[in-house]
Length: 238
Image (cartoon, helix red, strand yellow):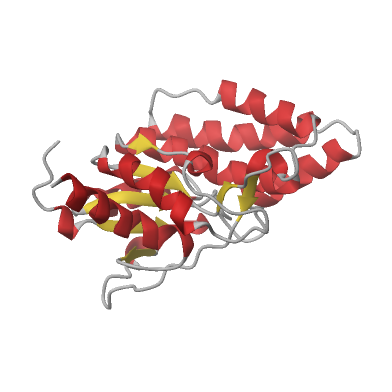
């Protein structure tokens, strides 16, 4: 691939309210596609659509808590499926999450962990957004690493993520989670991590049409590496 202007690459992150429903997805797509430099998108789980609504992350927590108690969570999980299927239907994209839903339900039944449960909202939403944008989907579980104490492992993440980003022109990456060394101890190796976007260029945070996004050239944990590792890898290639 040729990277004529990779130094202008931007990483944009959208929160839950910005990706709460199909209407918001369309606004996000307009923002992302309006600037060719916005190559990498970090996505959150669907947030509240209206006052009194329930965030998907909270719905997932509720399902998992029932699973741990050995109680049925079919009805509660069906509501989550309906939420995502509704977004897919309204966007008019050819995508089925049936396999992902089945895998998540099975993992819940085997008590995969609350961190794993919480991370599935970002995971599923990013799959949908990637399909809608026509971007590649990158699962952080394979590239974002934390050590046994839960601290961010920059060196390992760099070694895994840099070549991956260098091979892609565009990608959607779920926010808030990565993997830990001991998958048997910590929720299949997935841990939820709060990511604050730092180094935001003044004037780039966009609130138009009820959509808030941040464009970063630096920041904590995942975001700083998406940008910096992309440039590092391409400089090495050059």
